[in-house]
Amino acid sequence: MPIDKHTISRAQLSNILSHEENHFLDLKAIEVSPAKLTRTIAAFANADGGDLYIGIAEDRATGIRTWKGFDNVEAANGHIQPFEQLFPLGTGFEYNFLACEGESGLVLQVEVLKSSDIKKSSDDVVYVRRGAQNLPVTTLEAHQRLEYAKGLTSFESTILEVEPQVIENSVATLEFMLYVVPGGEPGPWLTKNRLMRDNKPSVAGVLLFAESPQAILPKRCGIKVYRYGTKDAVGTRETLAFTPLTIEGHLYAQIREAVAQTTAVIEEVRRLGDAALESITYPNEALHEIITNAVLHRDYSIADDIHIRVFDNRVEVQSPGRLPAHITVDNILDERFSRNGALVWIINKFPDPPNQDVGEGLNTAFAAMRKLGLKPPLITERDNTVLVVVRHEALASTEQRILEFLETHDTIRNREAREICNISGDYVIKRVFGQLVDRGLLEQVPGTDRATTTYRPGPSFGQWRAEATPE
Image (cartoon, rainbow, N blue to C red; front, side):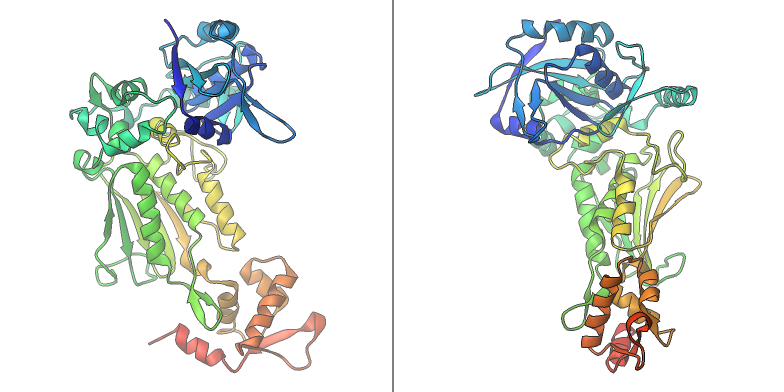
């Protein structure tokens, strides 16, 4: 079977060279041995699929990448032949030669789909892709986990009885085809990537590319945003601040809109500004990762929406379905499993994908909370849902937490302030104390100095307290 040759634009070339290697992408020079490259191909197939570009050189000293391809098609035979012996063309593996105006030689692109069985490299070892690494599966337990994962089916591959035009001719598809490498006609591309079968779209295809997936899959792919004016465990109609927001559209747009709308709702927490207490912004990175994780890994066979509830003291993100395969609340930050492998892979091909660091989403969220001195999210698994809770009280600024501490304590010292604010730097707290003293919110207790310096409420503390707790 002949291998297609495509000419890509300078913009597409720039896109390839600028991408960091990740869970779905690897860039290699032609000097790398074919045997070593079979590890990457096998690892992609055993994970969630990916793209391997052979013919991209990188200067180790500067990190600058350059196009340095094969002189001609025949020059790549030493790579193609061992690849096709292990990973035959058309069985989940596609090979393309890429040319670009102004660049010499041909780059070999290997497109790998997630395989239904376990693939081995030329050294007869099983590898899986984790981040930008190809990790060998060396233990019986790890091999059993991989076998278990390969035996699972997903609702995302279900074929829907709708016309192909709902995804072939959508704006999302047409815009995407201008960006993806290599481009082509929507129908063949969607079919090749298993988003259509027998000229019918799959659930994944509809979720990614239909103008209104919610009209085709009602109650299965919407997002609801609520605002409850209470700290109670359950929100009620009486405490509902406004009619819940409904966020629809294809997943790429839906994630962005959900993050923006939720951020707007929760920007009510206050911190000490230039003159008074001002609104504080929620850790956007954590919010983005938690919502992205809920959208990409929920169980779409369950007729329910994702629910984002903003309370006075917390944000809840509830997604349908239990944790997949071997994932548990205890190992979720260390292990990964894609219930919806096609969704996760294809959406990573979009410009500025929401899942840039695949497999690291919740880890990124936890790290973002720690960086700001906030308590980590809580993850719980219920009968048929997963709930991630970020407690709102942690959104208070360092200044606000110190002032709130003094509502129930007569004085505060540096050590106590560092403990309640989760800040290790002594100088950071000293600077905050200085700002609060300058504004009359704190004053130094007479007779204390150096290691014993202690602070108490200042003359403006009462005014702050009245403003912070209006009737």
